[in-house]
Length: 385
Image (cartoon, rainbow, N blue to C red; front, side, top):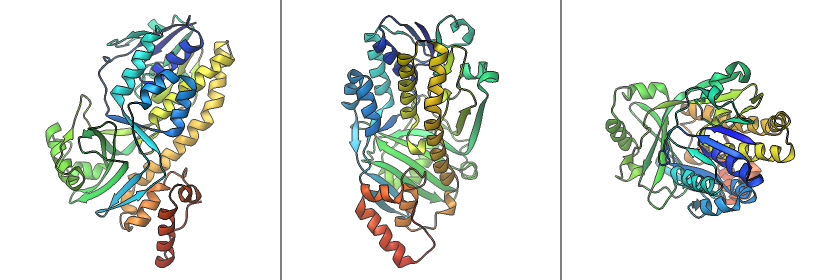
């Protein structure tokens, strides 16, 4: 089978690896706009469940990935200058560039044709193949070119966010809430190697404009945010790379997932808000599901139909959970008055995927403290279903 993949992110790379594992005679090429050492992000997060999928599908790359991860089991919620820690949440962080480089090397070992610095401007030139995969991100050219078939919707959400780094190590998945005269700020942070943490900051547009970010330089932006999160960064500066700008999160859905011999994967197909840390997970699981469909079905049309039927319900469920999370964060001022303990509980259950009972199994002491608070306070907050 001849397979052309547009986009060298996690979805495209991992799909190529899996298809080569199935049949080394597959002729697979990947056209990637950037160079092998370019990346727009800092670190990415995985759960233990994701690692089990990687181990089952390509143990070679999984071993390399897990060997370069930082591991923790705590979520920290910082609100009103108090930190509440919730245990039993096992996550791992790895540098995005390191992760991609591991997949690059695995692709080379399997004789995948990696074409870096290849800016695709006309997707019709890539149609001469058995399967054309669009793994070219949220701004997918392939999706745009065939938009009449895919029927995408792109909902730009209200909050603006910027993806930064820092040498301050956050030993856990940390949500930090700070306010100043200009408004409310939220930071999402976690370590991904021995020296560096991801530091994503989001705020609503009113705060963004009042703070003057529309006219601030990169250095001025970092300086301002360092003051906002001074107690958390402990005088360590914020770091930038080659993708430093405020953006609105695009919530992407597609009415149809494939057309003829063309299929979308990863962010080109769907997005889920970064607050639940599932973007890369979803991309990899797309690749696993699609490869499995080709293992079960040699006909391209049948395989693509099976992929959408199997995968769509799972993706839509995760998108719904992510949407619940982003809506709460977009309206964080409604909950700002809460004391740290009930605030942390609401943050942990915001997506609906973590129920009271699940949380109790993970950290019974935290839940016991919350239940005690609830009885004493006698207020209208309720236990999550």
